Length: 619
Image (cartoon, rainbow, N blue to C red; front, side):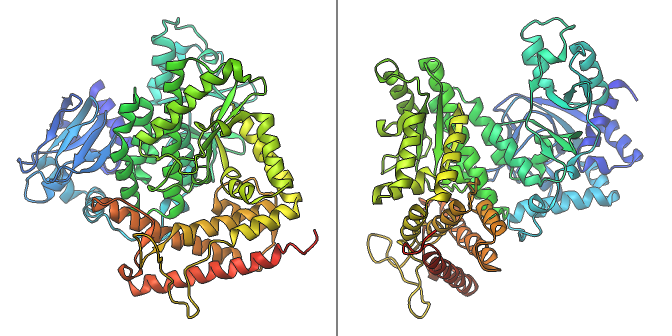
């Protein structure tokens, strides 16, 4: 076996279903394999032309389309396509083109057919995947979803390459090549993880800068990298990589490095669109390029729903995408206006901070400035930066907030000390306006800049909120203003005004009041969590609700959220403007019954909230 075949064999061993082949089948592939290069934007497969090859992506990215031209899938390294035509009449059914400069291994149709007929594992993998993609509707319950049941260590296939910081980049590169590693971990004398170096770091930080090959790893590594524990869920790792736009993530067990998962590992377990979309956002060079991704955001949302992702998965992924837009716009703003004259932190508020964002959303954000801020010296800069970001978000599909809770509003650009005083006043002297603002601002997340400012504000909310019974009582009363849409006989009460009569606003009458009451309980127990499901876990741990009530609220939140999410996805898929208004007549009898049960749980939870935080009670 020559060097090239050895390299191809090692690649096959990393990717299913090629890693299911025995030696004879592998040799059959190697003896007939063709390799082709496709320039970015060039067609690879055209609809209805003869289907002669099965394609495996060695490097680059490929877009696959339906026959009507709508985007169907995006694939990266290790992805494959072309099986539909080979299995159905030898005609191309799904056209494909190169999204980036792409190198493909091409396996001739007779070889593919032979593998399909002789290798059961190969056939099962391809056939099941084919069926799933064509139907786009495989029913998977929360318990059966691999993202929520598989631990991240199940994705590890090899021990990590661990080297001391003093290792030269040349020696490190040689060892990475010998073991086919795309990343290595840097350890100190006690074998503790202190950094990570990827193949991209060698290109960007060594070759591009002309550093000598004797340069130690300590000078080019990313220090203190994000990590996951071996028993964390695949879902948690995926969200971490989406949030930080990471390509590699170290996995630890008892503080020791167990392995490294890559984005290509995770891409097999989740909608490829979300991961590709975040990359596309950070690769954009202008607001116009970012705005052009609006359709991709909708496609990613619809695809997740079609793949039976649950509400937490959808909300987290959409929030990660929205956060990425903000971060990229802030990068572009700095390129245009220069570095901030004083430290600052851009805040995401509301559903994005709670990681419960959907496709129908506006922008809620604010700007925290260092206490050294002087309006006469620095005001013009931050006004330009805030306007640039808010205008950019609007162009990207995140509508201006009708209540003007945006950093472009001077009211929501102030120094850290002023924010602390404002929050303290809302808690110690609750007013109608302050309570409304608390519902938005008390779900906050620092997405750019000095995120320690956001941490300080969250700590203040936690400490003062939990100790102020008057504030909690006021927040509880405020949380009761939006009631579930149930009549005396548990019939649905429809909207009666506006253009959406005979519908139910699933946000205003469902998810919003649930999020409100969960927030009150979370504040009372000092929870630092922002996501409603995470807050429910803290509430359950505190034991303030009767047994079984947390589980009921959790199920109610999930069901109402999914009815809302599916309604929006169906609207997008049908080319309609998505909204939150659902016509119960469009639901099945089963869905209507369960929805009524979910709203009843919300009603009962509001009754308990009213009792627990009565204003007449003492602390």
